[in-house]
Image 1 (cartoon, rainbow, N blue to C red):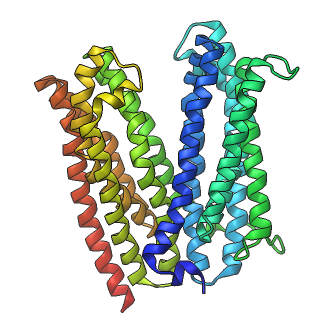
Image 2 (image 1 turned 60 degrees about the vertical axis):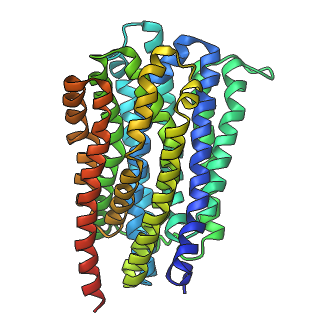
Image 3 (image 1 turned 90 degrees about the vertical axis):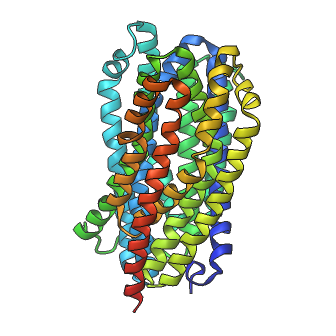
Length: 446
């Protein structure tokens, strides 16, 4: 029997989560280092790459969102011991990844200048940005297939391999960045194009390692093209979970844009503070997000195997771990807000706005952790629409108008309280939904 079905649930969740958390940390560090090298080349290069960032974010959102749908369906079939269906799902997942790559390749090639023209009139920045977008989108097969293969590893409980392939891709990217950007070792100086090439080479390397690992180390499933044909049920089930997950992955990007528009009416420093907060909170939320990435296949597998007690046990333990992690994050933000802001060369104005902001917003961390864990469980149990609605409430529908109204009524310090109110409401809704779903699962068991 598979370890997802038999291993002690607490040990299982921890051992599957840690490699994912570490790999996410590696990716976060890579993003920071990548920006440093580009900034050293020129300010305009940094601006060009920054304007392209939403495109990269959207590609990852699509890849990860559809990966959740693929992961859920694959893990469920493995849990049901329907290996023929699992193998068929494997092929469909890769085909969907390739289709998504082709869509972004076409959009990137034809619409790069139009997209960049929305943000700047500087022809040099549009030129550099277009080069970057075209390279990253037309060669994005690496990121789409890599993430699909990572989900195969997660669905089979082999998350240690996730860490290996992500670390390999990130390390290669970091090594190649300065070589390609500045033209070391006899290579021509390529600037922004060099940064894009380093990125896609890292992604393609990670993809190839992932393909090798799945072929030679993952025994639960295999590619079997014998008598292959498209299966409408598998495609429907992948998209049923994947599209809401994709939308949830994208919501944060839209929230940041709209929040900046709101904060701009108060001061530029408040926008800086919010973006600093966003970068800092990622290192707190990262652990919980890594854990939920492990939770999804555990819940989906045991749902397929009809091990209801293990589903409830894993979600309950995830809630406990989330509370501990988010609690520690809250303590750090409460005690060291000035030191955290100093990492970003904050001035006195930023300290004045940022110190109370970090302290107020961090009160919502534990509540946010509850919602994140439960929304992941909802996805794995095919209640993806419930997860989507709660995420929309949390990131857009409640948060943005509340922030605006409270800030207008009592200043920015009161505006930050919107995070606490929003996360509180969404945590309560999530708990009520989980209680009802849990009752249904218990009835299923009997």
